[in-house]
Amino acid sequence: MTRPPLLLRTYGGLANLAAPLLFRRIRDRLVAHGTSPARARERLGHATLPRPAGRLIWIHGASVGETLSALPLITALRAQEDPPRILVTSGTASSAEIMAKRLPAGALHQFAPLDSKRALRRFHAHWQPDLLVLMESELWPQMIQTAPCPVVLLNARLSARALARWQSLGPSAAYILRRLALIVTQTEATAAGLRALGVAPDRIRTGGNLKAAAPPPDAAPAALAQITAALTDRPRWLAAATHPGEEDLLLAAHRQLLKSHPDLCLILAPRHPERGDRIAQMATGLTLTRRSAGEAPTAQVYLADTLGEMGLWYRKAPLAFVGGSLTPNGGHNPWEGAALGCALLTGSHLTNCAQDWQTLTDADAARTDLTADTLLPALQDLLATPAAARAMGARAAAVTARQGDDIARTVADLNALMPAKATP
Image (cartoon, rainbow, N blue to C red):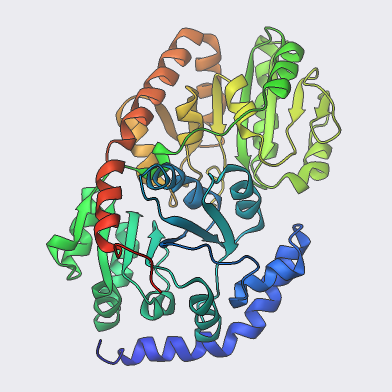
């Protein structure tokens, strides 16, 4: 390949120089969230597991949502007669913890190397991937340029603003995008935008939404039975993945809802469970029990301040508000709740997942664009008409079930890009 444009060379030089300082910040954050220092060094390309024999596909996603969206594909790849091994990388402690629980046999997790030449050189020397699959919008320039194998972008999700930014990069954008052997987009709009950037039509197509095709989160049967027994037949609603600035609004709405539904339970599951103490202090005038304390949902508010148990809460709440959306955090993936038949509500700040929510609203399977003023009426409406809420949840489950139809074709595409045998 020809020499990279000046902008990419400048980026590479700055990224390489900044890597040691950036690593220290990332290491401290990972260790603070329970990652061992040895595993934190994976961000510098130091492997903590041996490379398995055979062909190996490296799948990289930013965090929990992106790595979970790859699970249906990983399962399909591993179900083949001569399956490749799978290496999943991501950047967050929460994604590492969840992948450790949910990856199938033959797949393993490491933290992703920083986008610096030294880290990537160590990483490639050890893992020797036969194919690199990037999820959604993880277009790291040096990761793509240094990959010793074909590179694929799956479940591509680029907003109009992101496409405009790529357009402004001119030759640098074209240089990176030419390196991609295949791009499978979530929507035709993204595909059209990438074609306008110069991606060859035979290297891009629109597929299903892999994030929607991911299996819903598990729920331990014993825990599910305990929660079910404690809730009895009380009406309840879930506030999932909430952020600072939202809990006060949600608790205020719950206080109003209790006037017409005095036995109503709010299951409040913050995005970051370590904020539990602060959130508990906000619940003035309400009774509250906490999952982290081993307590049952017997109060007006049940603070679900644990990690990895969203499967419990979505199964027990017919109505769910998904946070990160009343405040400008970009919103969160609706598909876990949709797969489990929840009637879904969310706010208007959805830059991270607008197309996901649009797919559901087009099917009358979700309500979006809620604000501090319209949240309460929406909740009141669905609590007062449980049949309508159940119908909305059923539509959400049906839409979700249709999203995995493209997986077999994607598996065939990836097989065609890999060598028939492992790289020596």
